Length: 394
Length: 100
Image 1 (tube, chains in turn red, purple):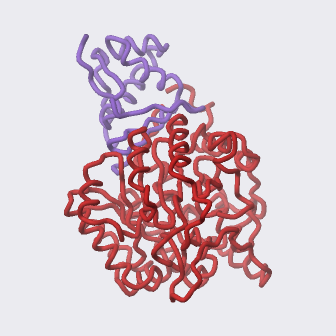
Image 2 (cartoon, each protein chain N blue to C red; image 1 turned 90 degrees about the vertical axis):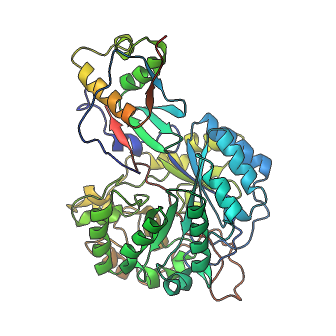
């Protein structure tokens, strides 16, 4: 209401870090009954060091004290944890809302009814093709039917507005209207996010990433539908094509976003499960709050960042150099173009990099691979845009 | 998710008693505060300390106008604050309270 001309913009406040994350993703387990080829967390097998029920509850207590209003729970497939519903109930009873991502395999009619009865729990069903062939090629045989069945159960139970979450690939980029129709059919909301070369996605990225032409089509589609569709603000690199996309066009890693993994390690965002971006562990004496407030990594990320090679680009203010994780896992410098830079600077950088080795994820819980598709979890970014459905009031 | 259906500003009635809705929480931040509604999962950014303080003060004052006076909102600023409170009321972040 006063003197906004002299005060810092909201984006500048975000870049300097908030008192607590707005968008906190918590992967509860690396165990998963699917084996998606683009899994961000290379999930499959449970880690024996997984946080116990009591440790998870202690984290929830801390989140309540920090007023982290909701967490985005994922995995792995979080519902395979024996204490999953107990933890959801504990969180919601402590004013920590839950949105969890699932492949739908455990969303039975009774579970759907129970979910529909709670205001504090939201559900996100992952699907990566509007048709079974496109989906199952990425997520494994039968996974499309499983996801659809879960959606039917939720709709029949009267759950309105659950999320249908899609990672945009070369094979489904042409199906955006179909995904939207699918979500509408169930009175659900579509969420589309960017494919990152993280986890097992590092190996499938070249083959799955949208073409330059598709990127432009996705951008146009998002401009047209942006207010009705969630994106986790993950397509901000496309804003260099012109008009900015709705939402927060910046990288929130370590500033407004972070990830807690199944063993309590805290990473800057869900796409950078790598030692380089590990800020600490919730088992340390200072707990999660200590990591969020004090870690050297997060302090560094909250300092003004160099535009580096992008500094001379007229579109830098639009895309802010793109996604840190995408650069890191493709072996590009962090202060340079995104590998999928819409002006082509990323392709040039990738060519220049040639065949030099790229960073490997520090954690790989993939099952040994007798199965065709490998182990996994839904690719799941910062769930909702931190700015989805917001107002800024002065 | 109904973002920004802010068409047409509509200030609240400043001469009534208001309060933060029971299922809404405020979290102080350097820019002001975050407001979160657990029922609608809606997040709002209160981009000034004074607005955040005013929202907090609503419950303790007989009218919103009194709460504004208490937090030092000037006559010049009042229409803008009333608009901001109007948006919060429309989205269920603040609600009318029975008069004492």
